Image (cartoon, rainbow, N blue to C red):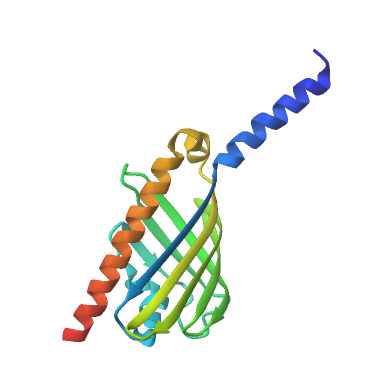
Length: 174
C-alpha cells in the first residue's frame, strides 16, 4: 500500500486516544446557607479534606484566599479503584462571591469554572470542568474505562457536596 496510507492510519491511531481522554463534567447544587458562608468554604481549599470524602490532601503554597487571582493550590484525590490523582490549579479569574475560573494541571489538564449565586433560601452553585487525562495509563485505558472514570467523578462530587452541607450545618452549631 502507498506510504500516505500509513501516515493517515498513524494519524488516526494518534488521535483516537486523545478523543477518549477528554472529559466534560457539569454539576449544580443548592445549599441552605448564605452566599458569604458558602463562598468562604469554597475558597479555603486547605479545609476541603475535612469534609470532602475522596480528597486526601489540599494545600496552597500561596496562602489563599487573600488576593486569590494568580495563586495556586494542589490536591490529591483517591479514586474508587485505589488510583490517585494529583491535581493543581492556578486561579485565572475571580469575581468575589460569584465566580472562580482556574487552569488545571497535573494528572489531568484543562480548566474549571465555579459559580455561586444567592437565592431566596440559600446559595446555588454550578461547577463546569473540561479536562483531559495526562497519565499515560489513564489515556490508554480511557476507551474502556471512560464511563467508570466519569461515574467515579460523579461519586466524588456527590460526596463532596454532602460533606460540605454537613460541614456548614455543623459550623452553625458551634
